[in-house]
Image (cartoon, rainbow, N blue to C red; front, side):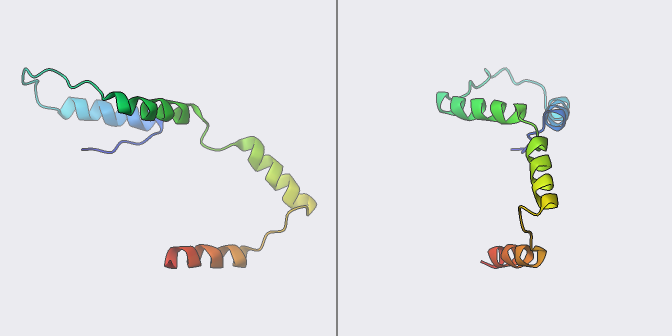
Length: 87
């Protein structure tokens, strides 16, 4: 099993690469996707359509930081991240 990236431009290249390296068909019928996979396929499609970063939100947070409306403590953030990864 190969895991491919969700970003369309990377995923399409990976899929084409896999197809070019796949052995010739053995005469077996293709396996149809299971009905239970349909919601996952739909969710994947929705996620692929979303931008990677919500630039409007990024701009709003930056502006709020610049106005002093949001405080940011880099040391506290670093400590929280380290504590999370330590378990």
